[in-house]
Amino acid sequence: MNFKQDYDIHDIPLWLKPSCHLLAMLLIAPLIIYRFVCQLTLRIQIEGEPTSLREPSVVYCYWHEAITCGLWLFDFRHIALLFHPKLYMLPFYYLFRSVGCRKFVYGSTGNQGRSAQDALISALQSGFASTLNPDGPAGPPKKAKPGAYHLSLQGNLAIVPLQITVSHRWRSWDWDRKFFPLPWAVVRVKVGPKLWAKNFPDKAAFLWELERQLG
Image (cartoon, rainbow, N blue to C red):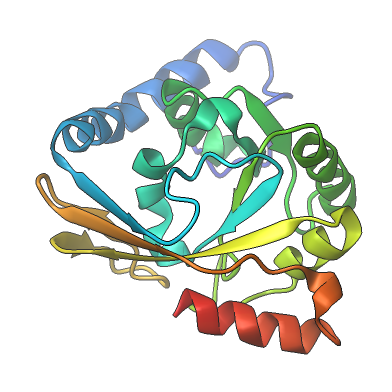
């Protein structure tokens, strides 16, 4: 079975559903086990305010290379997650379900992007927080795209930049060189000042400051 088939996770043909969901759970099981092991052994050090990363109605922003670290940093029961709904993302749906996420906003750039953004803003204004990797989903690395700016401007929302480093890690070979913390590593998070798009003269100035804060 090819998980790159042009199906959304909501419109899988009935005859394919059992095998798709079973395969998705089998594929993601090692990552769920890895997350559980690291949950028991990682040390999280947060510098700056807030130190809990539990504030409502904000967007936590960090580079795509640190995307795996979100599995330990956030309480996903209070996160509205912008989620690409293509079939190949089904294993990751189960991953985020396993960490408590129940508020999925389906869509991404080029895939019901505007309606998804409106739904995400509504969820944020109702008290959820969210996360965003501004150089995702395909780079170039550490070059912020305007999604954070538009979310902040249209929803009057604060963007909270996070610099994330890990003491011991393994890096992937894909475009972002994403890192995976090793057990007993230290994850250090530097929380930057909140950014509001309305406080900047234009989009370029906002994105320049966001990139500077993200390091």
